[in-house]
Amino acid sequence: EPLRKDEIADLPACFIVPALGAERVLVGAFYLDGGLIDRDTNVVARDLAARVAIAVQRAQAVSELHDARRLAALGQFAAAIAHDIRTPLTSISMNVQILRRKLQLPDDDREHLDIALEELARLDRSVAEILDFAKPVKLMSEPIDVGELIETTKKNLTPVLFERGVAVRVDLGAVTDAGARPSDALTVHGDPQRLRQVLTNLVDNAANASRPGTEVTLRASATADHHVAIEVEDHGRGIGDDDLPRIFEPFFTTRPDGTGLGLAIVHKVIRAHGGDIKVRSTLGGGSTFTITLPAPA
Image (tube, rainbow, N blue to C red; front, side, top):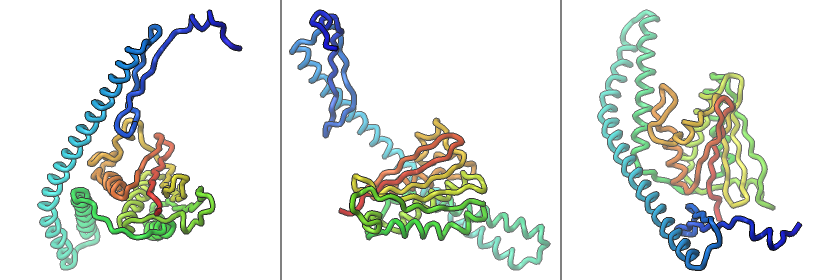
């Protein structure tokens, strides 16, 4: 029902001015109330909103620069330590292997040497992750069939996951681009070795979080905005709300045996491909990591 003039006069007046930054990105808004807004107030409010938007974006840029410098310094420091550790680590591992071959030991004592070798191998993997994170990402670029990439990852990991009682399911499902053939739609340009590393890391993490008897799903589809989406879904323990915002931070981990670099490297590699990665998770309800990569023009 239309309002009468006397009813309109009783309505509270307000004025909202968007604070638009570079490329007209909305960074906030001013809300003014208390009656009618005259022309001069309008001009002042818009000018102030524009200045605030610039200030906010500059502050964000400075914060991102500081974070980048801090992470670069941290990576260089960690890499220097890793280099110093790796040489004696290799020497220790070689000597333990020599002892294991030469000494005639009872099975119980030989088991201790096997445990030592396993721990040395784990340390070597941790050192390799630190060195990998510290290096700038260098990518090859070639057409990649995402379906083949996923199938290869599944094939390589199936024996390991079978021992953990976790199955892998592949779903190369709906193609949302009208008229596109799956072979065309699920193609990206990138470094196959690096993207295989990303999927291997995500599937391994998903399996570690899963209970025996459950499955990890690898899913891929073409999106309407000319990207390819790859999902890794598990039904494991999930990630808490407090940990979720930090999940891609270097050296952040919820696992006692983790370096906290696996997901940081994943994030770094995907961003180097011009893509993005996000995670949805609920504690006790599993997690889904979604990678989006640009499809060839």
